[in-house]
Every structure is written in structure tokens, then in C-alpha cells.
Image (cartoon, rainbow, N blue to C red):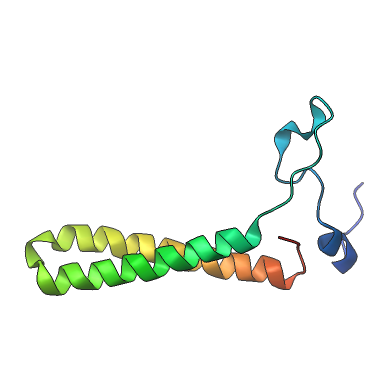
Length: 93
């Protein structure tokens, strides 16, 4: 049975957690790039929101595409919040 992880485990990182190939050829365990993912989610959120508003206001016939961008902006927001949660636990990256 696996023991419950504590704050120190997350601060050290969870080796092999993000890399299924860690067992092959003696490769070192991958580390999570949470900060990069946070920046990319933030950029996606800002870009999709601005583009959706622009399409709704400036090009009403493309409102269907603006709704697609709204859905992508919501997905980026959820990802942004989830990454913030993981970083607040103390995971490196």
C-alpha cells in the first residue's frame, strides 16, 4: 500500500510522474513545467477572450467562431486555476 504524500514530496517533485518512459534506457525522471503551462494558459485565456469579443463586436456573421473561442477561453481558465492549485501545493516547475 502506498503511503500518503506530504508537502515535502511535492516540493521535491514526483519522479517519473509525468514521464511514462522513465523506466527505459535509464533516462532521468522528467520534471513538470508548471510555470510554462501557467503562462501558456494565461496567454490562451487573454487571446481567446479578446478575439471572441472582437468577433462579436466587429464581425457579427462570425459569431459561431466567437463561441468556439469562448469555449477555449473557459478551458484555458480551468487549466490556469488547476495549475495554480498544483503550484500552491508546492509542486516544482
